[in-house]
Amino acid sequence: MSFATAAIEPRVRRLVADRLGVSPQDLIPEASLADELAVDSLDLLEIAIALEAELGITVAEHALADVRSYGDLVSLVASLVEETRRPDPGLAPAVLACVVPADGDPRRGAVQRALLLTPYAAETVAEDAVRAGPGARLEITLRGRVVGGTVARVRALFARLVERGVPVRVEPEPVAHLAGSRPAA
Image 1 (spheres, helix red, strand yellow):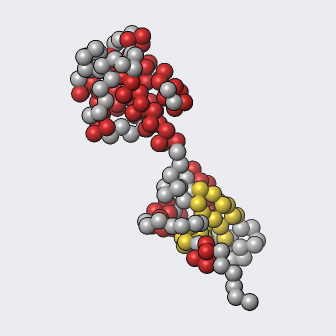
Image 2 (tube, rainbow, N blue to C red):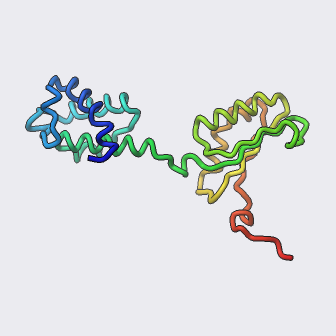
Image 3 (spheres, one colour):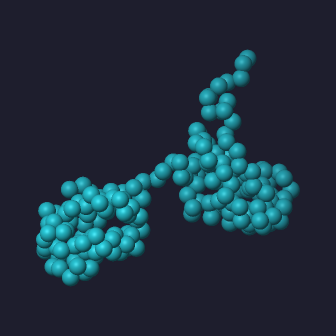
């Protein structure tokens, strides 16, 4: 049993036992959901919805088609929980965020942050920009290799700032910097 499975199994056990009205001891990995626990497709869907709410995961309906035993259900849920905890670099790009104050001099009162742009980090950067006051602007430099759609996605994260009159510039890091090239002597 993997660490993720061992960590999540007691919560799944409690929820499934409560939903089905069975003893937690009846929930052994080999227990057939249909044959031994009398779970039909609607019951399984209701359990999946409850697990989604409890654990903050999304269970695709097609994934439930392969769930035959209680052990299959626990394995599926553990893998989904693990996926949600693993940062996706495509979803949280590395950025350099710089809030430039109204006077335009980025060295005077600028706030710079190098971070992975998670929703929480985006909120923090937006708060920095609002706190900088009228006339401030936000400059975001995407670090590393930029995959398609990232620039638009980052711009969308800060759309409410633009609506409030804070200019936002989002650009990929210059290619020469990425390649590590040095200027010719």
